[in-house]
Image (cartoon, rainbow, N blue to C red; front, top):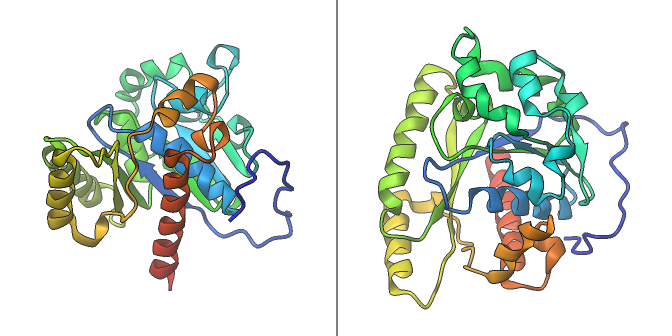
Length: 277
């Protein structure tokens, strides 16, 4: 695993065979669970594992965009153009400071997309259609979803192969997870028969707190092997990194949060290898 993330790297040759990217929606209908933090840091860790990764910022707040060092006011176009104007996604992809990691940003325009999509008969498949031409250019596409179930999240779930669920170790965690599972099941039946939960990641875990241990035990008893062994700790360096426009793996590679995301990426890749085998 390459941990020298700041070093320049050569992008894969165009002569390499292009397999379709694995598309993962990073989703939870509850806000404040570490969803965007997981999206940008897991993407960075996967890129460190020599994977070509695309992050799609589908949250109007645009935190994944700024968290990867892209200034939103300086942007002219965003994922909005692909969803509402049928603009080719290739023209919206931006490089980041992380080798092998690219971004489709979000701007303030995305806030109006929910209303504008209402009149579109194909509103739930816009993202899936936009993704199709570029799936061969990446190994993984991570979609950072808004913390609500609207047309943006619906587009992500229809476009995705699976859902990765960040879950904060708190009292109401299982209740929120139950609602999300019901949503995924409805989308699976109506639009995307192959959609499944790829895994559940416990975030903001404080081992000094007995409640965190109780929540972890409850989640594992209900979700079994879907719950990742890797726990993402509550870590001040992870919280500081977005204000510097960097993933925590660039901000402080040695901190506990960065190491946890590297471990999570390794575990995800092992799961994916077992699935394809």
